[in-house]
Length: 115
Image: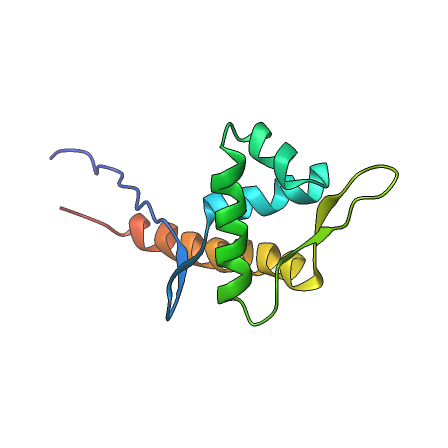
C-alpha cells in the first residue's frame, strides 16, 4: 500500500473595496516601510519601487479607507516625510490577523487531504 502523500494549501489574501483592490501583502509591506523610514520616498527605494508608484498606492489606500492610512508631514528644518495614522497601524495588524486565521484553517484542511 502506498504511503500517504502530504499536501499543502497555499492562500493569498487581499482585501477589496467597492472601488477595487484595497490592501494586499505588497501594500502592507509599503505601509511597514513608511512606518520604518518615515518617508514614502525611502519606503519606495527600500522596495525598489518608483516613488510615483508608491505615492499612487498610498493615495489609493487613503481614498478607499474610511480614514487615511498615511499622512504626509510638511517640510521643515528636517524636511517633510510621512507617517502612518492609527488607521494605518490598525490596517497592518488586522491584515496579518486575518491572514493567520486563514492560513491556520488552510493548514488544518491540508492535513486531511487525500487524492
